[in-house]
Amino acid sequence: MTSPAQLLDQLRQIVGAANVLTDGDLTAWELDWRRRERGRALAVVRPGTTEEVAAVVKACAAAGVSMVPQGGNTGMVVGSTPDASGTQVVLSLTRMNRVRALDAGNLTITVDAGCVLQSLQDECEKAGFLFPLSLASEGSCTIGGNLGTNAGGTQVVRYGNTRELCLGLEVVTAQGEIWNGLTGLRKDNTGYDLRHLFIGSEGTLGVITGATMKLYPMPKAQLTAFAAVPSLEDAVKLLGLAHQHLSSGLTGFEVMGQFALSLVAKHFPQQRVPFWQESPWCVVLENSDNESEAHARDCFERLLEAAMEAGHVTDAVVAESMAQAHALWHIRESIPLAQAEEGLNIKHDISINVSRIPEFVNETNALLLERFPGARLVTYGHLGDGNLHYNVQAPEGDDQARFLNEEEAPMNELVYEVVDRYNGSISAEHGIGSLKADKLAHHKSPVALGLMRSIKQALDPQNLMNPNRVIKA
Ligand SMILES: Cc1cc2nc3c(=O)[nH]c(=O)nc-3n(C[C@H](O)[C@H](O)[C@H](O)COP(=O)(O)OP(=O)(O)OC[C@H]3O[C@@H](n4cnc5c(N)ncnc54)[C@H](O)[C@@H]3O)c2cc1C
Image (cartoon, rainbow, N blue to C red):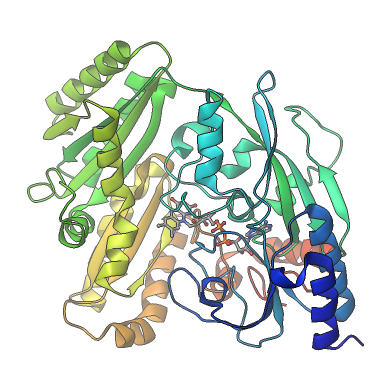
């Protein structure tokens, strides 16, 4: 039996002593982004190549030591940090950050899994292409983490989740074999599509080391508007009109409740937040046009005129420059950070059919406020995809730790019960991690859970890949 000290020696031989971290401040790898849980790792191991990842996995598997794949550690559900046992190896992919190939004719790019999303976007833009995945965490999250969580973000309404953007994967299996599935093919019906098993599996089936992703032509113009809407019902009507007027040009449609915007105004006073004081809801929407800026503006103006005439919009601004567009998007992207500044909070990342969102929010708000008087509802998100971040901040002046300890479980139960009645999902884009693993057992059918367990057992029979995340043993 390999001892922990012997395993550490083997790992040092594989990746070099400087890339096996055991001492000093390991907070960046051991504490999750939301500061919900602090784990303790046997070591943080930072391989530089796929072959090194494979050798590390083989050594850990032989020693019976479990592994936690980690990218930017920006996940929301405590899935990328080790547990408190001090026995797990964190496998950090961030040294693997190369662009391997860009095939302009095939509209694909092949990258290492540790590439930071923003660097990937920048590389593509330099080459004249759009890589449309976009999240507020893009400065730190990695493409491996995006694939591991099947991340969504703000462009899903047009381009789909990370899954839809991925054509091929390279994966190190739980046994340390390298599966090279790095294909740029758009059609390949040769049996089970293995890539889809690993996408969204949150590191529980294998380690993603490389990926071939789809590229798109850069649009000629991208315009952003910020609109005040009288109600969520009106926001949904505006979405319908936007689909009609802009068709595939509609590349973003985000809704923001008044309290969510008030937190941005409070914690980031340098940002000018339009309309938040007078309107219960605001929407940020984006039109990407392959013809010209004039055409984009014309379409947008006609849409906003029609929406105002029908009473779905009370006021709106259209950005005059890219800088203004970024500033408007920045308001939306600052909401999670403003929430963190305000204090600990309870997050629900839910999805419901778009048409039923207003009814869901009205019903759940009433139930929540009756049972938890004073709770402050931070509602915002990707309305175009039927995905809301239906979050709750402690009542003003309340003890936040008490709020979280005592109210989180009953509040989750209440919200998820309504989600189930609406045939929605308890995790639209953030995944399950360890935070929601217990919940999954109650909200997925026994048949679905059985199939998931069979897949886990087949691919990771020793249960060493991110154990107790997603499904518990
Ligand atoms: C401010 C902010 C805004 C956000 N906005 C969004 C949003 O709009 N949409 C959205 O979907 N998410 C959002 N997130 C959540 C988070 O950024 C995403 O889940 C992201 O995809 C995580 O990437 P990461 O590299 O940080 O992964 P990590 O947090 O390191 O890991 C996440 C999960 O993926 C697994 N994993 C990581 N790398 C690999 C790999 N190479 N192979 C296999 N498994 C791996 C981990 O084990 C873990 O289970 C946001 C987070 C923040 C902080």
